[in-house]
Image (cartoon, helix red, strand yellow):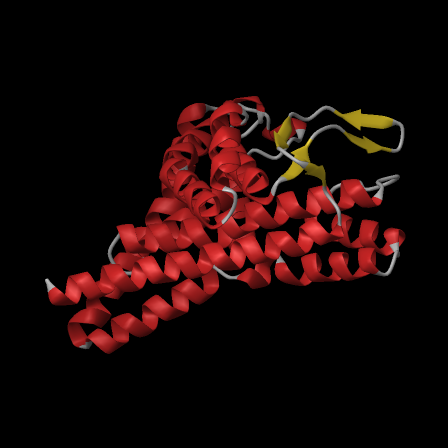
Amino acid sequence: MSLLWADYIESRFNAGAYRHGVLAWCFAVLLPVVLLAIVYGLLYSLNPLFGWALNVGVLYLTMGFRQFSHHYTEIQLALRLGDVERARHLLAEWQGISTYGLGSEDIARLSIEGALAASHRHVFAVVLWFVLLPGPCGALLYRLSAIVRDRWSAETPVRQTEFSAFSRVVFGMIDWLPSRTTAAAFAIVGDFEDAIYCWRTQPAQWPDRDLGIVLAAGAGALGVQLGRPVVDGVEVSDRAELGLGDPADVDFMQSAVGLVWRATVLWMLLLFLLGLATLVG
């Protein structure tokens, strides 16, 4: 539904100019957030339980491991069984990329990158913005901003205009703090020294620096090599190296699951302590 909304707004506003992108972003992101804030305020004034129910519903729709866990688990199982062809198919279906000719190491590496990025975008960043803004507004703000940025910045000739520039700039500001808190969580529950080293030295070479921070810290925390060139048939994708240690494999895929779960437990503990401090205060 959110993808259709982003595409609909783009089809109505995209005339290629920067100002059109600003106006479209306000309609696509800001307007739904303001409307949600009004609904939340009304429900909360009637009964706080109604506001709580809306919070739960919006969180359910905007976050979740379901966004990536199914494909990731199936890819991991296929690699365990030595079925590289099925793993390629699952990876292509999940990430929408060409996987022709990829080996098991490439598949494991791209899958770990996808899992770390998805855990950040669909779990940790959403939760942080849920805490920062009143009610469910922060969660919706983050998810809509991410979707709009991704859809409007897709690498097709019709979309390579100034129209998408504003959405990229705004999302960069919105994702600045979450990317660093996610990276910090990975460092705390993993190899702290390597995670911090990779965080400080590697993200600048990644196309999306904020996401590069998450991936570099996650790779360092796991002790695995991510990024690096990927051979797709006869073409080679030139990508910066992230992380330290051994090449990715199916065992590191399982380690990545453990890292994400430990980071999740850490976040839940911090949220519990924050809530407890609020009640006591």
